[in-house]
Length: 304
Image (cartoon, rainbow, N blue to C red; front, side, top):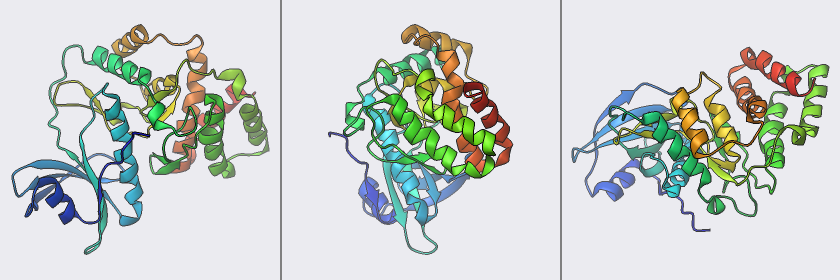
């Protein structure tokens, strides 16, 4: 495989000196709001440069190595903007922390055809070759990563339907088993057994952002949409589109432009809620029972 892994350092000092030169230090650190998993900062360096840092506990360093690899995969397609990765690393001095360093982006005013360009570029990414991202299979990724704070299994599969069953729905249902009564469990088994009755194999494997909602893109320094905070894997492009519709949706111009650039397979509206069942289950496992009724309603729809 030609896919390369972004740099990882064992101290912040080593990272800064390697990236910016001997003697470079953090001159100022400003906390930035946003996100409920990691802390975020705008760092001003002793050379006057600004960079973006995410941080978490040392034990969660894998959050950032996985995110760096995901951003690198998106950038490798050359289709859509994403912040340049500087490195990931851990700092063990003092209280210790893990970190991800990215270029600092000053958000600009969106260009006039922002949503149309976003859709076209996302469609281009979905059409780009994904062969470097999955060893020994069509669907999955080069390693497991995270969906929010939960591990996301990306074990390769030849079939998209098998991948979605084995690596998406089954692990989430297993983690949430304590929420379900006997009738629910019977429906879940029926749904998993009949998944091929509802889903279709895609025309091509696509690199997906994997967690594409309104909080996971930003306006970059070119005035266009840039992807951030990915949970990447290779799957069916419909799964990305479905996620965009789960929490309020994007502009109608986005969907019209996407369908013009990359027509959907017939029946997508009937599959959309099944794709989003994965994210509802993940929210159930992360945040608790307020998502249970939505999960049960979706399961009943497909396995009544």
